Length: 290
Ligand SMILES: [Zn+2]
Image (tube, rainbow, N blue to C red; front, side, top):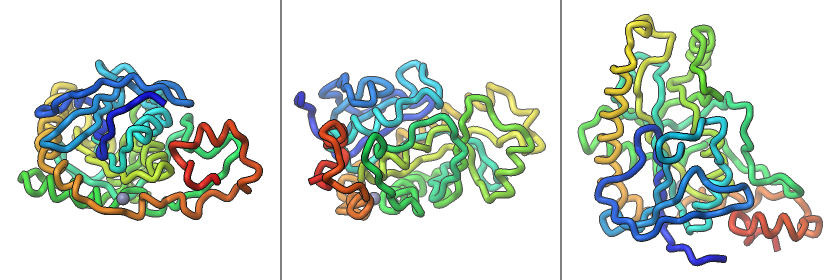
């Protein structure tokens, strides 16, 4: 096992967030995993005295589409660095009038509309069923929401995020259907990221930044690319401000239920687990496989 500098907190940057100001790099890691390479190099460094890892979800230059994202490699690689908490940053569309462009939403629920993604570490001879009724870490989500409020940014605590496959956006009929289901936001990347983080026993919370109303909105056709880009730029600037304020608080969070998510989840008889599966799952579930 190569030496990797350890960190407790990881930031997964979304559209527009490819680096963090005030972050002092100490290592740029090219990590390989049983699921291939992560989206990009993982940078480990120091943000306000806190060791932090940073991964741009779509790769520098935004090269990787949501469907092609190596979600398992990303989460696996972060786990090998000792990460215990993840803050994910995402651009989303809004399905509700009250969630306006440039607002921050900290979602507490997910609806999975993805189709082509590997969404578990537990295959290939080992079966586990984690609890996912509450898909986001309450502790991390609370710190994010308080960070938004504290900086005077319009912030909503709670909301249901619909995750679609993409890369094309929804039809109007789909958008109206998601609204009827109780969806508040629409994005393309929170799943299976949140699910894999839970399987890897890491706390996971999302900063979802509204760039536009989805196509259900009567004004949708009047929205220009320039307006969406302007919102995206403002959102990225605000996410950097909030990250700088919340990282020290995140570092002080204690043990969480997320850290024992696998305790009763693996149902495969241990005597039937192959050496290959044990090696592959060692960073994720090694302590449960004896
Ligand atoms: Zn947690």
